[in-house]
Image (cartoon, rainbow, N blue to C red; front, top):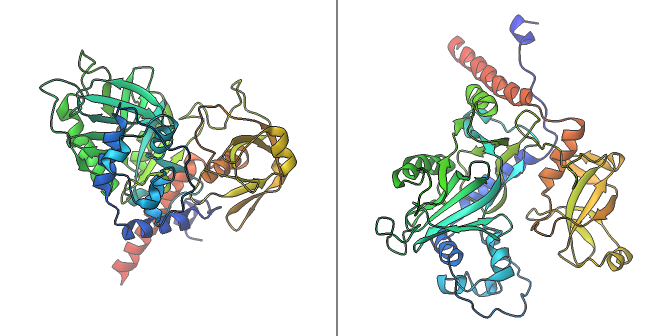
Length: 422
């Protein structure tokens, strides 16, 4: 064996079908022709609307015609087409919260290291705090949490974000930002830009969105300290190419906020609402206080805990689209628990009940432990359940991420050597 073979980094083999789903997502993205400009207008119009309007008494089940209209799941008029600005501005209460709760792009948890991590991905440390999106329009700024409820309503230096002459503008000059509110320094850390002065970035690559974010945010004064017409400071997070140096810097470098893991974005990915394998989150004890889920007392339970959604037929599913079935209940359980279709329920999983078959997680039995916090809007995703299981038994280590990058570099070097020899 040649000496350089002994030093070749070990690349951890894949244990799931995450890469296959990532390839499907990229193909689907290339085929989509959604009207993102109208989607951004609806969001900006709805989030600042204060006009109370009567709501329909019921919401019929909707069968979506196209996958790129998944954000309309809770819309009672979805069978008649997309909401226009007037209809969207009427949303309020629980209906508004359900609609807004589906506007964020949510990362999968990293189960396997993606191929070409060093060339196709960005990485940055995720600020610890409340994930939300922020909309500035018509002289006010509103932030909404992941569950759709309002976090803050305030003036800001974002375009059209305050009722001042300097920050006013035409109605179409709204902005939409994907942020994390960091309570320790009362700062909105911007991790993505969806719309800027009415220009939609939904169908732009992450590479362009991050360039635009870093180019435009500082021009407005939004990064300045708080003032009378600018209640909270905004700041862009430092984003790196996922080279070995970039990954090391994101992982161990100093930042002005408490870290909660690393976020990875595929450079070619558009902003897709809902869960996507083109954005990934990864954690370990060095970059996050909470790697394994804890109970209400902050303790790590002996058995893995999962939150699943109850369906009409008694199946227990994840929040993915389409949902993944991880368990089943009977009529007796439903009657005793008082649960209804759509209820979120918490279960414990015994280690011996879990199997990985052809990249899929199979669970033999789940044990009901109670209901999650009422503010929670969604069940766990499939990738989170699998990540949590792996974190307890065979976690994906930071060294595995580094080894994957080094392996790619070694392969590229070998290809160059062959070319030169030829």
